[in-house]
Image 1: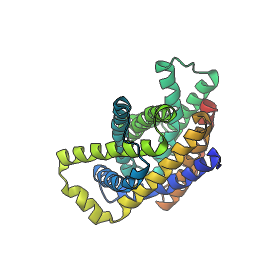
Image 2 (image 1 turned 90 degrees about the horizontal axis):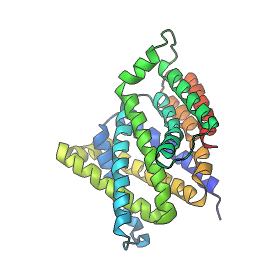
Image 3 (image 1 turned 45 degrees about the vertical axis):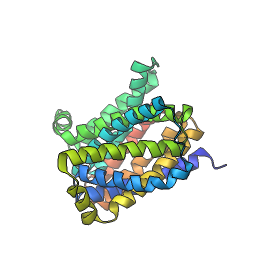
Image 4 (image 1 turned 135 degrees about the vertical axis):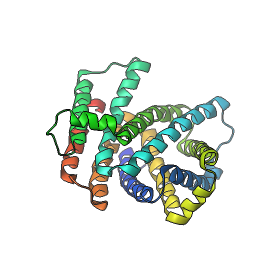
Length: 289
C-alpha cells in the first residue's frame, strides 16, 4: 500500500504546474471565461469516472455536496480574479492563512480551543502578511495595511482562502462519512461546472467560453486534467491519514509555487517573498502541528 505522504508530495508537484499554467492562461483571458472553460473541460474528463460512480446516493448528502460546490465556485472565481491581476509570489504566500482560518472556524462553530501555540502562529502569519504587503519597502509603517485594504485583489485572494478553509473541513466530513474520493470528485465538479456555466451564460452568454478555447487552445483542458490529478492525490492522502498530518506537507507547495512561479513570470523581489513564505510556514506549522 502506498503511504499517504507519497500522495501528498505528488500533489505538490501537480499543484505547482497547475498554478503556473492557470496564471499563464489568466494573462490572456478573463477569470470567468477561464473557469467556465476549465469546468466544462472537467465535466468532459470526469465522464470517464462514470463506471466507478454510485448514483444511488442519499439526497441529503447530494444537497450538502451541492452547498459545498457553491462555496467552492465563489472561492475559485475570486481566486482566479486575484491571480490574474497580481504576482504569484506576492499572492500565494497568503494561502498559508488557511490553517488559521480553519482553527478560527473550529473555535466558533465546533467549540474547539485555540492553543497558545496557535495564537503565536497566527501572530507570525499576520506579521508576515504585513511584511509581504510592504513589498520590500518599510519606509511608511502604515502603508502595508493601507495597501492590503485598498488592493481588492489581495482581499479577493484572502476571501477565497477563507472559503477554501470551509470547504476543506466539509471535504473531510464527506469523505469520512459518506463518499469515496471518486464519487465526491465526480459530483462536486459536476455541480461546480453547472454553477459556473449557468452564471456565465446568464451574465455573458456562451460565445466568450467558445472564444476562450479558441484563444488559449488546449490550456483549459490541460488545467482541468491537472485539477483532477492534484485533487485526487489530495483527497487520497486525506482519506488515508488525519488532515492534521496531511496539511503540513501540503502547505510546502507554497514555497515551490512562489519560487518556480516567480521565476517563470520574472517577478520582482523574489528572494524577499520566498523568505516571507518560509516565515509564514513557521506560523502555519505552529497552528497545525
